[in-house]
Image 1 (cartoon, rainbow, N blue to C red):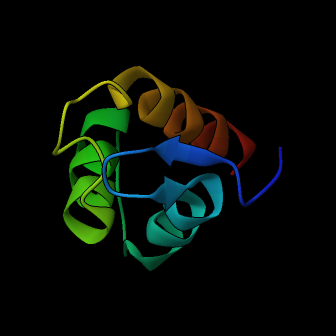
Image 2: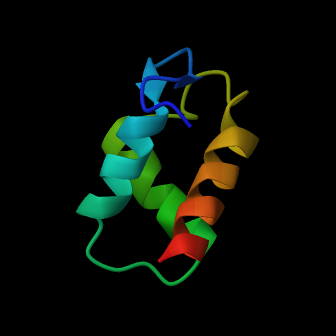
Length: 66
């Protein structure tokens, strides 16, 4: 997937921004805690919330590859 793909239109957060935020997190044990960390760093899913499922899918994919 292209890093510049916009996932959150409200906050202009890209796929790459989400992956980078996951790398910044020291440790996360589950998708929900990772989502909260990514949300805190990027502010994605704090506007309309329409990107919630996309963000969760990206986090799940990245975590499964680790």
